[in-house]
Amino acid sequence: MGIIAGFLSMVFWGTAIFLAAIASRKLGNVLTLFWMQFFGFLVGLLFFLVNFNSFTFTLVSQNVSLLVVVAVLQVVAYLSFYRGLEKAEVSLVGPVGAAWGLVVALLGVVFLKESLSTSQVLAIGMIVVGIVMLSVNISDLVKSKKVNFLVGVKEGVMAMLGWGISLFLLVFATKELGWFLPAFIFRFFVLLLLVGYILFSKSVFIPKSTKFPLKLLLLIGLFDIGGFFSYSFGVSGTQASIVAPIGSAFALVSVLLAKVFLKEKIDRNKMVGILAIVGGLVLISL
Image (cartoon, rainbow, N blue to C red; front, top):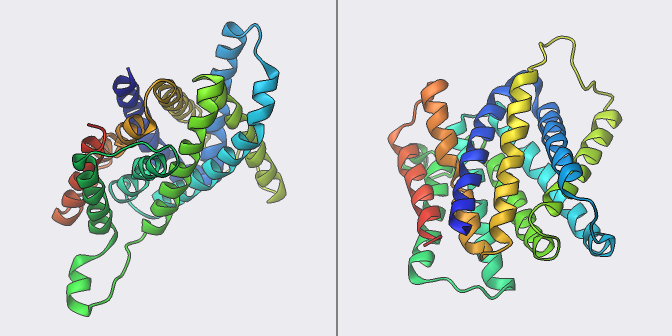
C-alpha cells in the first residue's frame, strides 16, 4: 500500500506542478500558491466535515508547533519552486525540486535509524549526479573551467530542501494523528501565512489586469491535496524512506506533460540528468 500511495502522490503532484507552471506565468507565484492552497483546503474541509464527528484535541495541540514549522517550510519551498518556473522550464526546475525524496530518505536514516541497502546508496549517488547534470552548463564548464548554474536551479534547490525537511517532519505528526489531519491542518497555516503576506505587501487576491484562471487553479488544488493525502496515507503505515522517493518522482510526470503540451525541448545533458534523478528515485525505493 505504501508503494501504491507513493505512486498516486507522484501522479497527482506531477500533474499539479505542470498546471502550476502555466498558472504562475499568468498570476505570479504568490497568488498561484494561495489559490491552489485555498481550493485544496476546501476539499479537505468537506472531507473533514463528512468524516470527522470528533477527534482528540490534545493530540492535535501537541503537534501544532510542528505543523506550523511544516507550513513555513512548505511556503518557502512552493514560492521558490514557482519562482523558478516563472524563469525556467519545467524540465529543469521540476527534477531538481523533486529530489526532496533524497532529503527525506537521508533524514530518515539519520534520525529514525532507517537502513539503506547498497542499491539505495547507489541511487543517492545517481540523484546527486542527475542534479549536477541539470544544474550546470557542461559546455561552459569545459571551456571556462567555471561553474555557472543555470537559471532556476537555485530556486529548485530551495524547493528541494523545503519540501524534504517539511515532509520528513510531517511523518511524526502522521504517526500520531493519522494520514488526514496533519495535511489538512498545516494547509490551514499555509493559508494564514499567505493571507498575511498578500495583505502586508498590499497586493490583491484577484488581479483585474489578468483573466482569473478559476478552473485551472481549482484543478491544481485538487491534484495537490490529492498528492498530500496519498503521501500521508503511505507514510502512516510504511517507512518514509520508501514512500517519499516514489512520490518525489513526480518530475517524470511534469516533464512529460511539459514536453507534450508546452513543447519544451530537452537536450542530451538534461535528458541524462532527468533519467539519473528519476532512476535514482525509483531505485532508492526498492
